[in-house]
Image (cartoon, rainbow, N blue to C red):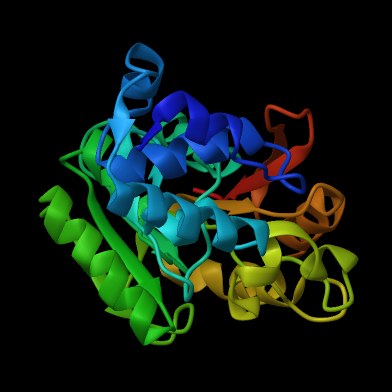
Length: 276
């Protein structure tokens, strides 16, 4: 028989920058308890089956598999989302898009489009905060569309529609007050693609051509045809891409262009508005 404290002491994850947190999340899931339970009852005995499950989780984590994929879930905003290897893992810096959209757009009725929704994180966070908004979430990957729809149904957010679409391909004639996207923006030869958790995430959700700007170029070029007058386009991008994105927005007629910093003081999102 093994106690909680002993399992945590023996949980070596030398290559993880968040080793203690990872071990606690994995053990809590293995025993079906919260992390606070681990700290409150460190001398509690763990059943052999749960201890083996924890050992299996640790082995997968040591191989580099992200905790979110091991557990099949990830927190974003105030939501718990199902995740899977065919979608990008939602990250805290993307919450800046949600915050900014709510600041820019009045709280009354609005039509909002989330391009490349993945798990549905951005669309579902906005829909949960603005129940009067009508949010459309699209993705070109069928498995991602199904996953976002499962998250939508579980969260009971009836003001979201999830569709299959490669960017705007299925949205002919539709216009929105806000278009928001966290598209692929990593360059094809970026060394980060073969390091850390990113190794396990789908390249289709990460890579966008030789300079990482291919999808951003397409979205910015096509967005004016799908925005109302005075509509906003909000984009997440790489830490060193803000100037290029601002230039693209200006070239395609956007105004009030600005970039905003994430918690690490990187220019993480850039936005622009169509003239009224």
